[in-house]
Image (cartoon, rainbow, N blue to C red; front, top):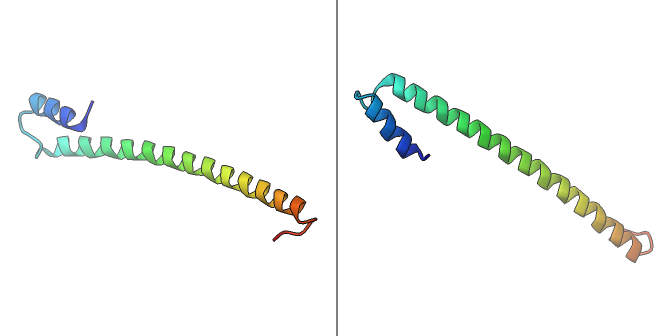
Length: 73
């Protein structure tokens, strides 16, 4: 359900409109929850990328060592 649909439903339920403070507080609270969950997802994905990068860097260094008789370029 999109945010516009939620706003439309809230306006039907609450005839005072989007300027009602309770409506704004609830809307912003829900936005905050959504942003927190998205932030956690991004942090997790970033940590996975960092692990993959470290793994590839180590593999790259190992290959350089093998190709250059123990010396890293």
